[in-house]
Amino acid sequence: MYITREADYAVRCVLYLARKVNGITPVNEIAEAMHIPKSFLAKILQRLVKAEIVKSGRGVGGGFSIAKKPESISILDVIKAIQGNAATINMCALDKRMCLLSNTCSVHPVWVELRGIIERRLQEENFAKLI
Image 1 (spheres, helix red, strand yellow):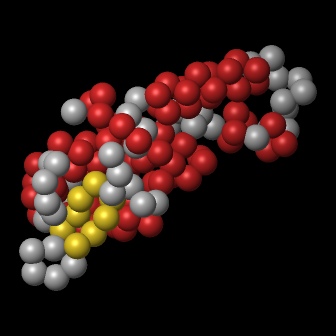
Image 2 (tube, one colour):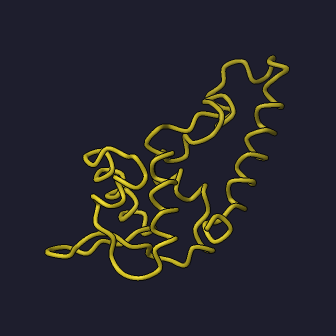
Image 3 (cartoon, one colour):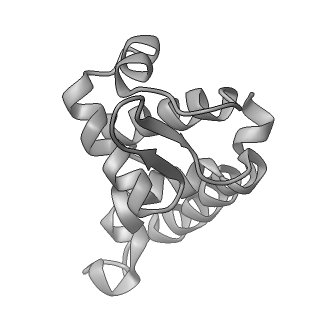
């Protein structure tokens, strides 16, 4: 499984916002607290807003806040908001049609099983459990 740096930063960002129950948090504060480059964080936050995980407040005093209750946001939700469905294992395990050796590859079923286990585990972990 490959989780991109961008997805890792997104998980950190959502965790930070989940802990901040009141108000809007400026990008600078999140970037500094979570050790994420500000310009990179801005792009990540745009994707999280589009996925309706985070909401934005514009203008003076603007920033970001969590859009849902922390218990309704899983780690997998955040990863998929950033990486799409390419968030698990590898191309072979994602879609049997994409694997040219799936009929003869004895490890293919193992990857498929692991993909399911990892996805279920990431779906079970919500941000309420992490704060």
